[in-house]
Length: 267
Image (cartoon, rainbow, N blue to C red; front, side):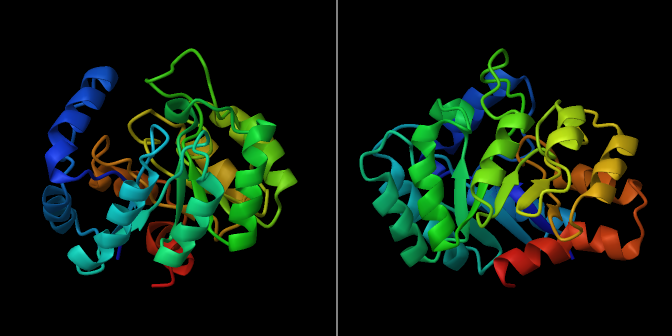
């Protein structure tokens, strides 16, 4: 069984525009058209049982609609799509919206520091992290390099580690194996921190050294690494094959491909 912990879908009316814009910026041919229906069809083709859909509030005021849409994903997909909510740091009701996300039953929250224009360890973010910690909500950050802001890294591993230490009860996933294209720093700064999680999104496409991946995995809590693709920007079949090719042994591979995410999601 497979759970993809890092997927993006969009409402039908905006999917073509959203995916087209991001494809132009990234230069990547998308694997899906970004709609729920095409994502489910490609999941069937690749044997993906559950996908975690990470939504991003790119401006204040979007949160309520985005979070309501995320909460509906589970029902409209027969439980195969699990939605994460989002809040924008500049939204005046960001903290109360996090509380509403918990009431909606959302599985977690996604922040994208590059799109939302904050650095991960800025103190203005700390009230949001405190609320997340008290609510027990899981949080995923885009981490490391991003084509949207290639010269300004908003979530480098060293800053991510400062946040993890400041909020030790907050479970936080630093996507892209802790920091896209910054994996040496991930090994140095993040590997081994108990409340830190990684997904494997884009590690295959961006050429992460398998030997470095194995070293990080050997130093990190075994339950804290999940399969991720960043679909539609990476084919989940490629992501899963990359994990299997690490040759970690059956138990460790299955934990990354399914078991660790299942435990987080309660499925």
